[in-house]
Length: 167
Image 1 (tube, rainbow, N blue to C red):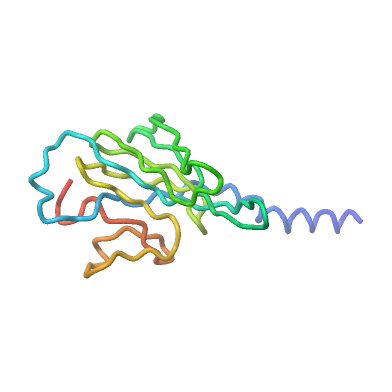
Image 2 (image 1 turned 135 degrees about the horizontal axis):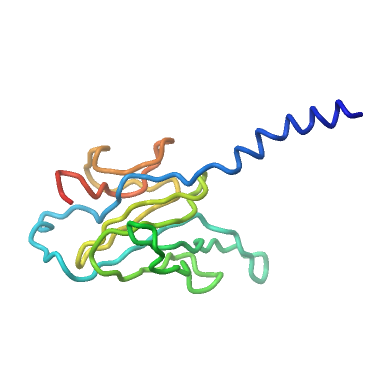
């Protein structure tokens, strides 16, 4: 009986250790590139939308809704700026749009298939930075894969903030 218990613990131990993995950090994500981007003033406010992993919520006659999970916005040093309630109600499947001063931030959120991740983001005046932490997003039009940030599995998260030497 003791041997069975020991083998069971040895068999389960790797599973328990794998559940405590560290948060994955990706390359910085910024807004979609536009031709007039370099003439924007360095100060001002921009917007952030984060498509986090969703949770299933049923209401009424077995009608499922998939609201996005909450996330945190932090300074580059890790100090929390804001916790974002990423939907208005449990029936709301649209992520919140947050207005922030132009600058660099960290988004700490849950990504589908990856769990907790940290995504550095750049907010530029009068532009929207979108972070898509769900598979299936692909920008319209022509683009180079090097212009995008993605997970190791290949699904894209957003536009690379440091593309073409822009900071």
